Length: 127
Image (cartoon, rainbow, N blue to C red):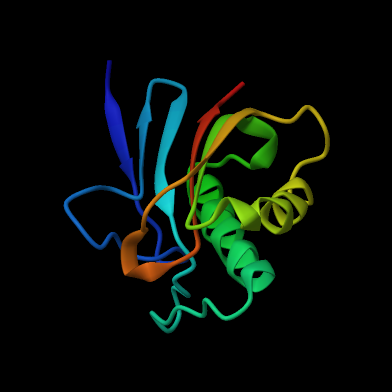
């Protein structure tokens, strides 16, 4: 099986030894994305709604770089700094899918990179 590294300037550059995403066969594995604005490198964690939208924008950019969209997503993992944020993040997350939602789990964790409140990873499959 051949693997292809997916990298786009429209999503934040990795902040460690990993790729934005890896396409293996017809399956795309997207690394956890946080709310880094790829244009400025800044992070705004003052509003969980805006933060969650930025994460989803970053994920959309990576999907697009692999010629996919949210309709191709089969599995997501959401990490939260506080489970009390679940409702807000869930509200934003749901707006990016047109039904047929992917499988998912959500965890509250002790801390996340750069002290963000939400990180989301995805697995998508090309038809």
